[in-house]
Length: 569
Image (cartoon, rainbow, N blue to C red; front, top):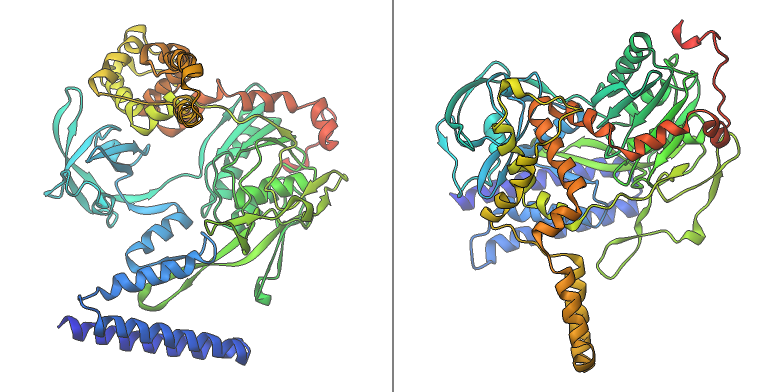
């Protein structure tokens, strides 16, 4: 029976290959057509030969999946094959929508744990909290053997349907049985918007999904018309991008109709396009600062790069990721899809900010290398300032990368911050709900962190200790033990990890992270962002830009007091 299924798969594959070859022949010259058909025939013959002659019984789907993934690995990391089972993941990335309960789950220590509950959706309404451990879904037991499976798929389903969930609430909460109604869940692109001071608004945009430009426009108009905003900080830090058209629409909020925002160039003429601002701007004359970091990529770089090229905004933060490639999703056989890189994009000045050359020379590990600095071209903004291609977006005002201690990194990696925040939150009842901005952990809760970690057998090492171990090995090889042994022993004693000491050294950042995690339990992602703004040095630096510094950097002058604002027509 299995052999017959394989033969049907081969026949289907041959049919797909034949159809593909006819399509390729229609758009490619004969030389390319021959190379494609030749290698497709080779792939088919090898695939069939492995099944017929290999000593074991191979799984056809697994073999083909491995072959496709290996082939795409030779291109770039953004060209991805989606089997039928992952089509919903692709749809969620583009729309931010899915049918489910509105909770994020993840296996931690072999147990499926609720990481986040989205505000206003069924999981929250049913009483689920971050830290809850799922024991069963619709009667299916979840234990250490299947906790790594995609439990999220069990929670998803058609809007209006129900799912039965049994969970354990740690730290005395007991076992709970919940009936949760599924709904259409849309994770908002604008995670938070609010006022930083009497005149400065702030919008945090986390992704560029369908409708994100509308969310930004709505937030912008609300802050301007209801809260008196006269200048704006747009935060794109950590935003990995998304839909190109949404980035164009967001730039259009700040630039005149008819302005060229971005262009694309590809192998096919259909991708040689220029994208213009098609609508009337909402805030054409509003002073603007954009925040970016090393995780700001793709559509984030279109927005920040074009606003920089047009001298429309001051860019503050760290050099961005450097993704100047455009993908499009194509339907493949048997309800599969291929997200494939079809073009490069160029910001308003004409530069492509793509950092890695995937079609060029690779390093010893087979990874793409960045183009040499000597080969990069310099472009000019509207005001004549130099901007360089091939290196992402370089901020107008660059800030140092904030350092995270090794201790905090390990506490996060081992979910100890997450677990202890769950414990602290469990001790707060409905009358103790913390204010998202002013909440401060009690001294009792802070001092209880060390015994909590000791009970969890938390251990860690540091880069300093690893470097010392390497040094000891070199000293031993060079036979300097007698000369340097005592000094190395003394140094080791000084830098050896010590939990009590290190929590004292890094109390500010560890405590701040714990407090943010507790706030997340009660006020969700928006509350966590609101709290972080009061302690964020990048935001403080952005506030200082408005005024004379903005004029110095981009020549921007605020409209005269009382002047008519055309964006309010």
